[in-house]
Length: 63
Length: 132
Image (cartoon, rainbow over all chains, first blue to last red):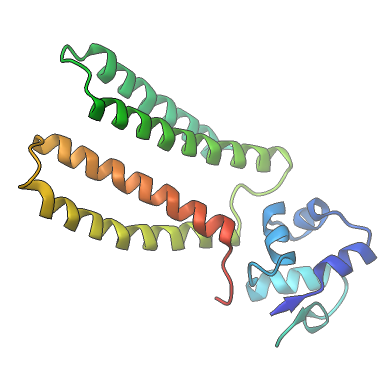
C-alpha cells in the first residue's frame, strides 16, 4: 500500500509534527507512514483523511 | 511522562544494585563479571534511550505511546519470547558442560533475554512493520 501523505502535507503546509498532533500520534509514526514502512489502522487512516479534508482512498493507494 | 520517569527510576535502581554487587564483592573480579557488567550497562542504556524518546514525545505534546509503538512492543515481545526459548534450550544443553554455578547460569539467561529483547526492538522499530 502506498500513500500520498507527504504530498497532502505539502499542499496543506503542515509539518510532520503538526500532522502528528492533529491525528494524536507520535511524529515517528508519520515518518514511518511516509516511508511506507507502516500500514496504519483504519482509524488512523480515517483521522489522516479527515485532517486533509479528503477521502481515505485519495490518500492511501491500494496496489 | 509518568512512564518515562518510571523507566529512569528502574534504570537507576538497576545501576545502584549492580554497583553495590560489583564494588562490595570480596571475590576477585573476573572477566565474566566485567562482561556481565558491560552487558547490564548496555541494557540500562537502552532503557534510558527509550525513556528519553518518551520524554521528548511528551514535551512535544505527543502521546508517549501510539498504535505504532504499541504494535512494535507487541511484536518485539512475541519475537523475543520465541528466541528466548531457544536461548534457554542452549543454556540447558551447555549447563552440564560449563562449570558455572546455577545462579550465574540463571543470571546469564535473564541477561540474555534482556539483550534479545533490546535487539528485537531495535530491528523491528527501525525496520518498520509492513503489510500487517
